[in-house]
Image (spheres, one colour):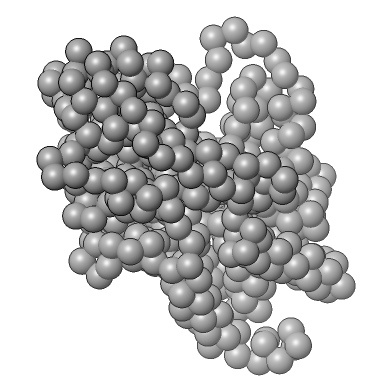
Length: 464
């Protein structure tokens, strides 16, 4: 089978990219939004140059897809576009460094792992980050190794767009600086290097200015998010996070990649291999270190596997590990199919936080009266309300929750009569805000394999 694919690697790679893009666009129409997706969609209706939780580019991309459709599949066109273009540039870079056979194997690895398929499904700031990381990796490679002005200029712009996507993009900036200092110090003397810095600064300046105007609130939140003040070590969190990498990048692929990075010295002797290895290792080591102190989400390492996929494909080809590659591919595909199938038919088990919210909002819709305002007990529930209610009315939080963009937009007299959707019984906290609080409906749905969860609908009036 693989031998047939190798007869025309470029054509087959493009077929895979287009086919998976079409399949994912259709597949995404059958899944309700995740709460975070609804929250970012809400941002797209309030465009600005910065937000409390993240940089703004995810909102910009959803704003564009809103012109096509604001349904679930429309919001997730961001993912379909981002992951497909990322795959294209992964293929292009692998061709540039190696050959079309390695490039096709890279695409096969990229499209077989469950991490990428999760990226096709859930819209997060990782979507534009993966998009611009892949393109930036391609043009930064060409800039450093061939020195063309246009490649430096594109690298600068793309680094800026990466920073507008997610703050952890700074890790790739460090990667490039480390590589230049260790392997290409002559670059520091070139005007093109400073052109790239200038263009990157111009791109990120509006976001930096927004932070300055808001007392660096977004930077402060992200520095505190995923950090610890005690520096107490929790080895079990590290092993949990490290082990998770074998799930998201598949057991065989992760095992081969990590073994090669730890044992083989070839990558340091070859500048092109070192460029790929460093782009993988810097991100992995940073989050491995962080995982000793606090729980890390598995998707944080996603940008590492852009270069990691190329490097893994090279390892299989260079060391003639044909059988190992085939076994790894089969295992990765099986895990991905199980994940895709589970999301479609057992969402209450794999991602119960997505399950039942759309139905709860539809139930709340049946109780709406003219003039009602709409509230929730958590930022994602408030976002669900705005997304799934007819007309997409503005929503807010009726009780205290963690600080979010809602707090930055909120007016002092925001509480009015209306309906409240909550994930937990909230009558006591609502009674501190309103004189009249009535539980008018509930919805109980599945959670996990044998459990259930209940969502609560309250009518509130007469603000205290």
